[in-house]
Image: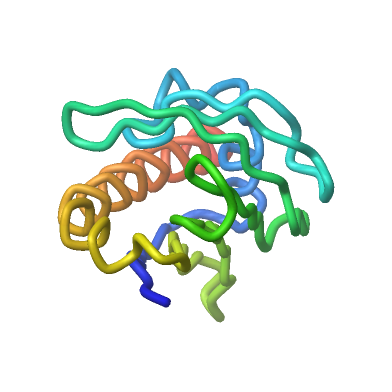
Amino acid sequence: MRRICTTVNIEASSQDVWEILADFNEYQTWNPFIVRVFGKPQPGEKLDVRLKVASLSFDLKPMVLIAEINREIRWRGHFLVKGLFDGEHLFRIEEMEDRSVHFINCEKFTGVLVPLFMYLIKKDTENGFNAMNEQLKKMAEKRKANRES
């Protein structure tokens, strides 16, 4: 098992972050890493997800495991067949004492091809996670500012 995890602190409420994160229909307008999601953030829902890593795009069909409002979305998918290269993705929103948010964007990889693929995708995937985190931060903080003005 291997993980790629990134985090960012966001000066916005967990609700502000959740509303952006859970609106899958809008990913194509802001998300540079997960460029398309069809489906709903509901446990048992089968999603159609398009990822863009560096200059490559690929489609996955993960299943939502957890969708806890204002806290977490988690899904699991497989590359080709289960057991080759599987991923469980986690988006976690942790509310801080000052009402800001610590956002965690993490993927846990399992399967026989993990050692080979991790070497090939680690840096680009981490960069993609960070780019997504920064865009989410920008949008949530703008949403908070608009709400407060």
